[in-house]
Structure formats: structure tokens, C-alpha cells
Image (tube, rainbow over all chains, first blue to last red; front, side, top):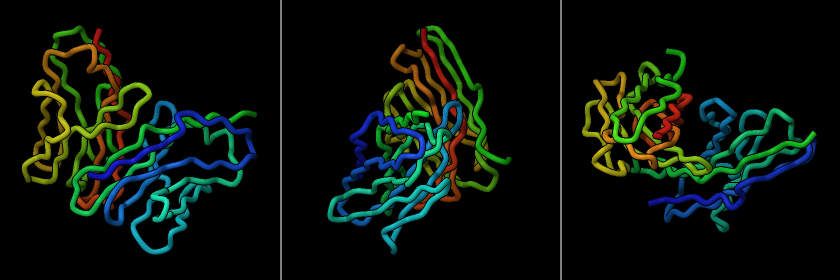
Length: 113
Length: 115
């Protein structure tokens, strides 16, 4: 079964600074990869997803992620963070033929003014 | 409906009591998932429904947990004889169908506290 690791439990960045959240997955074939954001008191919202094709994926709210098969990674990036980006971010991996997605433990993002 | 809804939003219960959590998926979504999110942890898959097929119960942690779904509508997650370790946020999600590349739409969750 597939699995995913988010090495950083908590990250703090200054508003306007760039952001990169790490995600590493484990799966033998080509995975389906997702990033979700969970804002306080709200449900999870999909930021972006990767199935195939171009390895650089654009998402909502100015986020992007790059699939690197050689590194088994799918890191999330944003060039300039806004205070409203403070939230919990989850990486998830799905696989063809599986019913469930595996979620990472999440990375909590704090944005300093 | 416009999105996935869950009720109640918060539930406080005493150890040993039974609880029922409800999920209303997006209309037309045939797939429905339940997850558990313990404090500071990721989402833990519990159970999956797809139309009228037999549910995938592989994630249920014990026989105290069960879930039902009527057709492609409402689902109920039941926890019997609750324990303190059951305290968590229970999230429901729905998607168009079983394909794992389909986006899952999540409800706001039910926060369960077992005293």
C-alpha cells in the first residue's frame, strides 16, 4: 500500500517570504498525489493534484507543486506567503485500484507579520 | 447540497456510551469516506462506501466501530462503548466515484470528546 511522509510538523515563515512544504511518498508505480489545506474550523480543501503529464502542477491560491519521481517527492511551493495561508497542509497519495488515499501527518504553517 | 455536511459539529460523551455521527454527502457523489483525525496527526482511513457495493471496512480500528449508508445518500458512523482514545475529529468526504484520482470533498468534521 502507498504511504506518505511530511517531515516538517511545524513551519514558520514571514509574510511575503517564499514557502516550501515537503512531501515524500512510497509507492511502486505512478502515484496520484494531492495537497489539501485545512484552515481553522474548516474542512479540507484541495489545493492541487497530480496524475500524469507535466510534473509541475499549478493549484489554487498561487500554490504549485513539483512531482520528482527520482526523489519520490511532491513538494508544495508558494513564492510569497500571505497571512491567510496560515493553516494545516496535508499531502496525500492515491493509487490506481485502491479505494483509499493515504494522508501525511500534516504540516502546520504559521505566518509571521 | 452545496457541500458535505456533518452533524453534530461537536459531541461530548461519557466513556462507555454509544455515539452516532452523521454525514450528508454532495448530491450525486457515489463514493463516501470516513476518516479519523487525532490531535496533531494525519487522517486515518476508516471506511469507504461506493454505491450499493459492499463497503471497504479495512480501516475500522475495532468492532466497536460500524457505519451504514443508505444507497448514495446519508451515512452514519456509530461508535459503541466509547473509550477515551476515540476522542478525535471524524471527517467525512465524498467523491464522484471510486477512482482514487477523483477529488474528495470534505465536510467540516465532528469533534468527539470522550470523558
